[in-house]
Image (cartoon, rainbow, N blue to C red; front, side, top):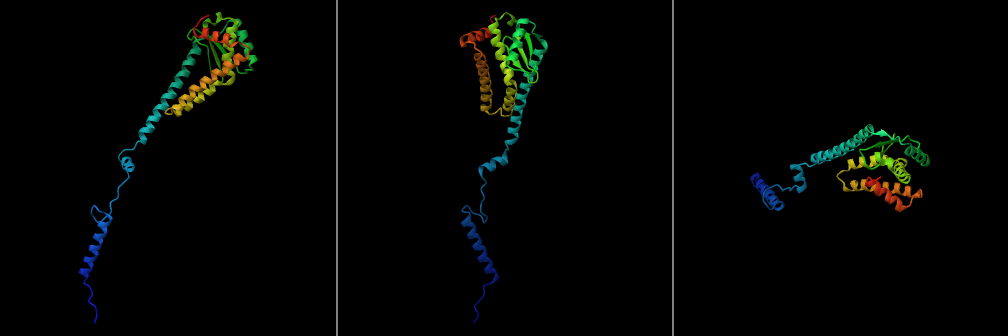
Length: 219
C-alpha cells in the first residue's frame, strides 16, 4: 500500500514555519532578516566628512606662513634700498681684511642705516651686512668682533639654512616641533658664530661687554 503524500499546501506551510523559526533565531528582535549594525565611525563619516575642513585649515596656515616670509624679505629689500653704503675708511679696511681672513669669495655689500640698532646679515647670492649708523663711534675691537660675527653667518650660509627651515615650518606649521626646530636652529647658528669670534683670540668677558654695548645701542 502506497504512503500518502503530503499536499502542496501543507508543504508550503511547513517551509514558511521553518523560515520564520530561523529568522527569529538569527534576529531575537523579530523579523525574518538579520539586522546589520554599522560601525559608529562609519556612521559619523557618512554624516560629516572632516577632510575638506582639515585641508582648508592647513592651506590657510601655509599661506599665512609664506606671506610672512615674503613680507619679511620685502622689508629687508626696502631697508637695503633706503640705506647708504658704508663709507668710513676704518670700517671698510677692517671689513675687507676679515673677508680675506674668512676666505669669503662672494661680494658682500656693507651698508649703514639709522633704522636698525642691531647689526644683521641677510641674502643668498648677494649677502648684505647692515651696521647701525653710529657704528663709526665703535672701537676697533668692537668693530672687529661685530664684523667677524656677522661675516661668520655669511661664511656658513646661515641665511640659506634659515630659508629652508622656514619653508619646512610653513609646510608643517601645525606641528609644534617645527617651530621649536627653527628656534633651536637660530640659537645654534648664533652660538657657532660666537665660538668663531672667541676662537680668533677675543676674551669671553670682553666679547660679552661688546655684545651688551651693541644691544643697548651704546657707542
